[in-house]
Image (cartoon, rainbow, N blue to C red):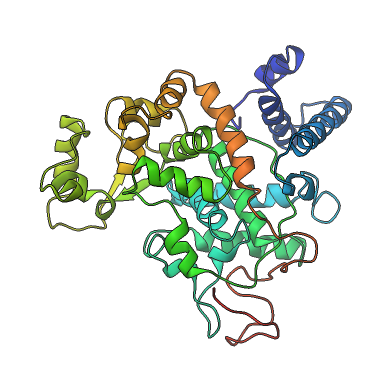
Length: 391
């Protein structure tokens, strides 16, 4: 993790008892700490990173051979090593600066990656603005007046274009930013697979139907995850754990307080004291844009408390609480595991993030590398030399 000390890391290296994905985490952390500290020995670093590369390569090959998504073989953790070796550190630097003035930015950036990947795959389509030929996903119901952080993505792209013009895709920026945001908030780190290219189209109608929404029950949530190739148990619960930081607007959960499922009564699964807190924050017919913490205990930290909150019926959104309060659901045992074992949550979260990041990426000669994440190349006046359309 980002906050692992040198001594702690050395201990992990000497006694490698972690699982494979934890080992990837350690490798990534060691590489980051190497860039931050002159006290580490260059020779040891070189040998260790060679070991890391071998392990990562074997893991990815193993997933591919065992029937995983073919895209695992198309993306690579070393994709920019020759063309833009500082890509990840550039992204991280911009996000660190953004955190100074915006404590919410980490949660906002990982959400952009989620909302991008669930619609046509991880192709940066969410970042496209409206033009004469593109109907932006930003204006889809789940995204409008909700998704944020686009200016930080712009700043990252500007910094990358200054250092490595035309090399790093906007889709990869979102993937790297998601990892950095989690890590900087106290969560796990992992080696991000890279090599995605950017789409030339947006899919607003797809964003209106393919994205999970805060009022969905467990059956619908499972269908949404299954539709994009994610599993309906561990992936669903682990990725929902990203709600361990960030905020939610009153308009997304006020019906749970006053008129759940048309009953004109509160959601019976809401903890009574938590109901009082939310009622005070979000009065009936009040300002729907007022924000509540998704995790009322540690709102800005990435930890397991999201799951402990669900056990106490303190999930902010219906889609959160459904994971624990749906009688007989196979997600309950996973919530209980993650609530009691943060390491288990972190390891599952990393695995699920890698799997989500590999939903239908554009690779090879597909798509393009956008020079501006908000528009397709050669589209400065609302038209393009290539055929561009919304779906």
